[in-house]
Image (cartoon, rainbow, N blue to C red; front, side, top):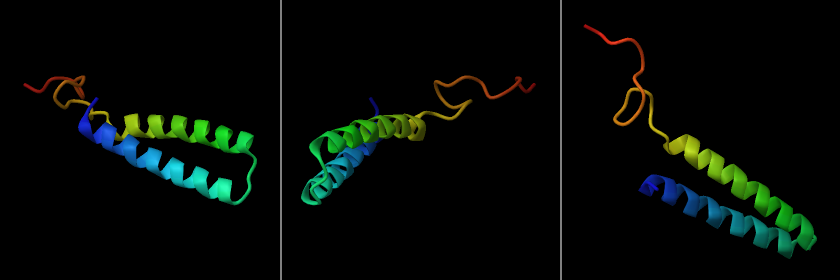
Length: 69
């Protein structure tokens, strides 16, 4: 796990905790808070992977086209 991936997830988890606490203070039923948290965790993981994956042709990635001679 790269450090930028971990940092992105930590920030997203802090955001989720804040939103869940706000929903709790607004008297949203616990079941719907849990559904929202699970959905947001999934979105956070997907977006963290998308933001931190390497570009094609970079170190460790697939080549970005035919070789140049």
